[in-house]
Image 1: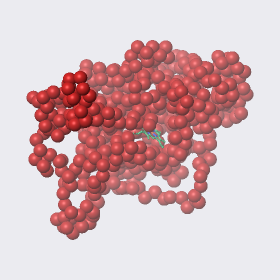
Image 2: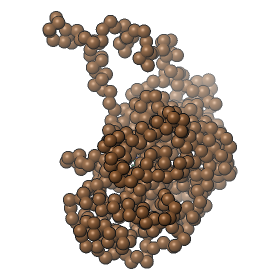
Image 3: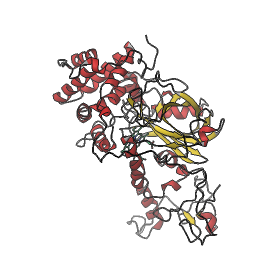
Length: 537
Ligand code: HEM
């Protein structure tokens, strides 16, 4: 391996270790001066005011005053755990990524599950999408798979992300509702930006109220590109399949749990790990040929509002994830972990999905604020387990004491350091970029917003459909604006007449006629299983 030029401060200065676990025999200031009393401030007499000179008081209160860091701008509420990923070796012919290629290879991971909309202190069992973000600490660098428990997303272009988040989070006047999609701006957005209808139906289905984190599927959503040793490529979608199967709460349970135990999901995660019932998932791939069109069975693989039904492209298992260790310090691990889609390893590359492309910018950018500067990769939970030899220097919260005088490559001063060989290096796949002119637009195929929503609806069992109808009716009944309810009913008319009629009846409104002929959005009968959790009744 390459040398790690980042020397910990202690080793450089000969400082003794610090007692970080409250166990030391005596109490000190942050500067190591021993204290005799931390319960009384220094005053001008027992009844007098506190003296400004009380350095211990000022240090203790000042540090407390700055204990909180900003919560994530989305996915603020989460819980995480450590674990191990074991490769089956079955992807060896698809990728040169070592952690997937070598059979039996074990890689340490950290996973963070989250809701999207609520603040850090909000309830776990609200109706929402769930984040499922995995950090693989591979020998070849860190790979982050930053996915959700639903295979599609609300929007097709990252430039709309601030808009959907402004619409879906609390109203800016009263900060209500805290954590759910039961309000006017949410339904206003999804009925105007109809590409959001597919993800919205997943939210209204039982997938929106999972039973536990360990009974959720996970999806990388976007299509990625795998590269093998010879430079050959395939397009893939990542799937996590829970060993316990997919299970949901019913709405009444979810509401009760929100009040009785807002920590329902994180408690389940930590209790099951403590009991030795380690949560497990299989990682699987849907694999597609890497053609210039980037489509499969007529489905545009760059459109993140579309799935490829598993009947057409079965999910092929490539490894197993076991979560076996709860965090010992929530702030250090769960709060400070920083995922980023640009954390890629040799053998895995991105595609031009315009949502994925924007995410490549956003995560690192937000973390510069959330984790206060550019050196957060040095926070223990974010440190790669592969050797690091970067030329990044200085900056706020720099903890490394770098040696040498020539932080650039190649140089002739630090031991005659040659230009890096590039051995086992990350390869940007040299895909051809179109000669078409620059445009602010999307491909025509992205304009179909309803056929896959109907596909999802038709795949549901009767009880699942009943839950979806009730969810739309309940959530839309929280909308104050009649025109927004009516506009959403028009979207439902484009998906299915029965769905539309039932929700309209529940809201006491007439069911509108569809704007798109049903035949135009009806999928082939062979595709019937895309979102089903249970066998047909
Ligand atoms: C956070 C997933 C789209 C910006 C997250 C997290 C997940 C996630 C799982 C939480 C990570 C954690 O646990 O720390 C997704 C998925 C998307 C998507 C699956 C679509 C397929 C987007 C887009 C943007 C975006 C389009 C912006 C253009 C962010 C930001 C955070 C975040 C800023 C907070 C990150 C942090 O503070 O560390 N996302 N996201 N996301 N996402 Fe996304």
